[in-house]
Amino acid sequence: MQKLVIATSNPHKVEEIEAVLGQLGIVCVALRRSDIPEPIEDGATFEENARIKAIAYAQALGVTVLADDSGLEVDALDGRPGVHSARFAGIGASRGERDEANNNKLLALLADVPDAARGARFVCTLCVARPDGTIEAQTRGTFEGRIGHAPRGSNGFGYDPLLVLEDGRTSAELSAQEKNARSHRGDALRKLVACWSGASSPR
Image (tube, rainbow, N blue to C red; front, side, top):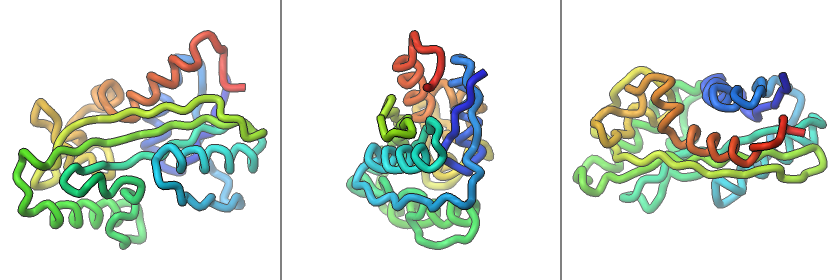
């Protein structure tokens, strides 16, 4: 089994990624080195930020690294929060506190927006970089829905409780298997698997 370092400390993301990449015989390992400076994600797009993270950590660790940048685009907000999704509200010490604050801010901004205009999507960009800075693969996936009026569901994280899908459930009401099959990260990961078809593992 080959190991691939995932440039995140979020265990939910690592689980979702390994659930798909495991079919290539890849064991995904979370980033645990606290001595590596966190790169400044100042890109204007998800793609730019994913590349920044992947290259920085691959060079620092001397191994192949997969990084993702993901977030929520809301049509009524001209694509916001976009690359600022994780710290949209700008408050909260823990991930749970930030998620709650972000969701509350989003609901407040959309309070007077009708259902027909609440279209939104999750976006995930994945980038795999080698220690020499070479980009081995980069993919983008999306997960379409609309923003509900109140959070529902206990699965997932972030904005999952607010994204209402075509079947009426939120992303947070899907099982892990359903989410991997339908989500933005699952979409990007399947495209990544296709990029690596015929290759035994990350180099």
